Length: 229
Image (tube, rainbow, N blue to C red; front, side, top):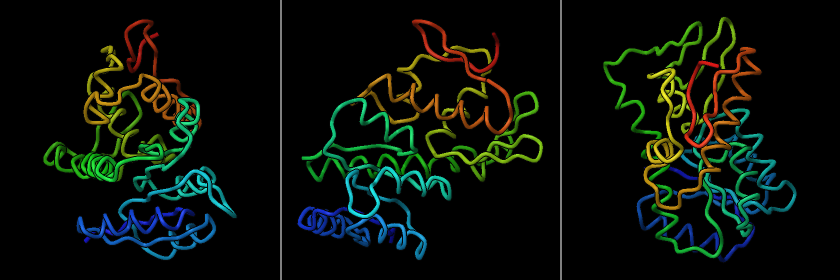
């Protein structure tokens, strides 16, 4: 049984989410503030984290950032902030998806399924394909979701890994934002090109910091490619 950590200070909402997900076959641990959420994360192994944006003691964005330094565990932000700028902040800090209050619990379940499916499918898709994918002197470790460059190892989230894999398989090819969103986020429902832009930006910063290389190039009116000028 998969175990999730839910960090949500609205107790009635938290209990309703936990009750619903328990019926769907998931085990849910609830914490009501950011510090308790961090302590729970350190204590147990979870398959996914549901994280409220606004929390006492330590807010959700800070907690998301700290968890991302340690792990590529899937994170879904639960937020009352529906503006695109707020969503971008969550994605930049490493969230895999977000859902805006108020929401239908069935939508939350669908997003959970999508995030878990993306993560679990990566290893299945690459069975027999070899552990490494290489571009110039950079390696993508398909088993550990890492970029390797010399002695440097760069951790990736599931979404960052999938974007990197798509672009590395066909360097110099230009991929539209719509194509990348469909391949990585699993369909065009709720499509927003800024989701792709933010994740590419976050990945670019990681690679630049770890390797000194700027690999991604935006092609005006079209999308992105790996390599080239």
